[in-house]
Length: 405
Image (tube, rainbow, N blue to C red; front, top):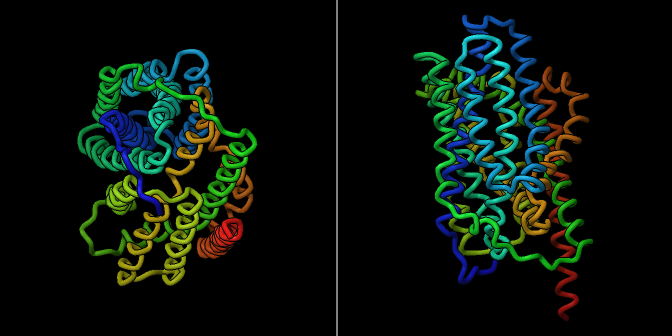
């Protein structure tokens, strides 16, 4: 680790984080009650139809982010795309208050298009403020990741509670209002804050190799994570049913965030003062992932209440793992991508993971029928990935020492 001197986060960082937190609270809160709303008395849909619509929503968001990034980078500019996207997303949430399938489809279409404009462009605009402070990128995007988790945590709890206690219309209404509030920081920020960018003088071949290798590592990590997480979700459901802990069903849905939030704060403080390579962080992320899911192997297929603490310890290590993985991809893209096309690069960065995941879906039935088998495969794969990264770090360190001598 090396000390970071004369660099600090500015107030703009926290404006962006606050905006992102409100937008994620709006979006995840809306999403948390969406299926329940479709199954409820107003629309009275069949379960399969509601889940199909929800699946199309998730897929459409991936495509809309690419379209939104193209608009932001090539046509509108990132800031205008953020504001227009936020307004459209808010109108979409308000449209869901119309008690009909017309209101549903109109609302979801607007939410998808608005989120596609908002999400990649706010991430890119945020990253551009750190182009000249690359040593702070990891801590900056961890602040951003903290805001995302805090927003989703509060949104799911708050909007789910309002939706089920009063009405889903109230939930959608609050979601739209939160979305509009998320735009306030951009009315305060000046355009120059986001566009004061210096061109990076980097060797193209090195930049491409760095980005692609990071995408490959993170893509593999999330695939092994998803395979293992089938068992984790299964355990969450079982333990929530038998645990004597006073935890509501809404809190069980976001219980992982309880660990992610304080771990994020510690990481932000540490990485703001000291710098370590992104590859080193990815390696630690894989190691802690192995520890987390390895602990789950100790829990029997039908757990007793005594294993609640074991499960929570696993979530703690999983939180450490995620903090070393999730913010790094945007950090690498910001550092090694031409800033003019950063939103496009960010929108495309999910595709390696999706490509690996499409292969995984061929075995979904097997892993869902036997979650422990999926956990075993996931832990094994993540272990090999961690060992490969450790081997590369040791080899690289040895070569560096050899050259110095």
